[in-house]
Length: 360
Ligand SMILES: [Zn+2]
Ligand SMILES: [Zn+2]
Image (cartoon, rainbow, N blue to C red; front, side, top):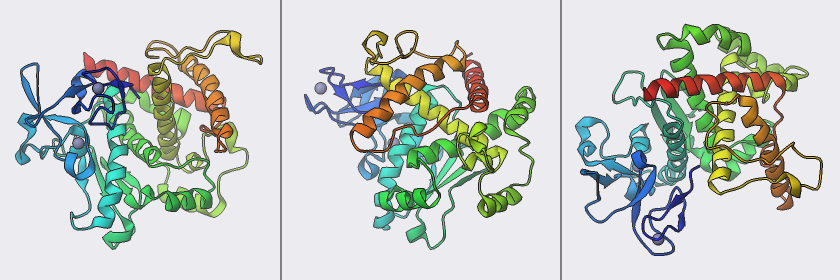
């Protein structure tokens, strides 16, 4: 995550902040300039264009700005920022229990959306195109039906109840997962969306499909059979030599989505380190460390994924020890065997190729 600063005093401000804790300036996130800009009651005039606060500022605490021209129900945005405009279904305004959960969940949706903008993946909303990206954020507890987290035809469904720490931790333990977060769910499900968009259905995607199948397996395999097998017999013996997680062993789609989520976990956390000025200095290490300093790059666009994963190996080792120093579980409790590195390399290439095509 980018490190933002106050537009007036340059004090550090968090991605979710809308006021400076140092000088009380009121600001909002302006995605095109990747910065916080000062706002007043009328919003902000930026390069001759009028920007307004997202209409979700009052309801879920959104701090993003949106162009005034989109302050129009007809245009699909409903006066919302890009991230919140992707919400297709949400709890009714009088469902206070679920609306509470929506507030914390929307924070994660905005983090996801920001990262997608940042790595320049195309975001084509459902209100622009049939099959475009949409989020149904609903609660099992109050909607009267069991909400199943998943992706289908561009629509990502999230069970808001997983925003409750106790409930999510219960699921994590019962499924024997080392890691389970709301942001992780978003990153995993959007992986399904981008596999369908960039690898399986985009014109010219054939160039990826054969390679994708060779790495992850044939996605045409029966999903229903895979689901039954996974919950009957679990992951195969020795899965760690080929997969990032037990869930990834279930079906080629899940393998891709798990790897995609990890790609976003790793790249975002490396960005956070770089933006903080963090460098791991070889000469200060009291053990046989890497050959040189670990200094996160501005981007890893033009280097092999192994470079990025080498940096990540040392950074995550450090963060794991920081967490255990605080009596918590390791931050990144995963191993990356060779086949997983190859899968991440494929995703790195698809993301970078797509970003280049988006810019040109
Ligand atoms: Zn300030
Ligand atoms: Zn918003």
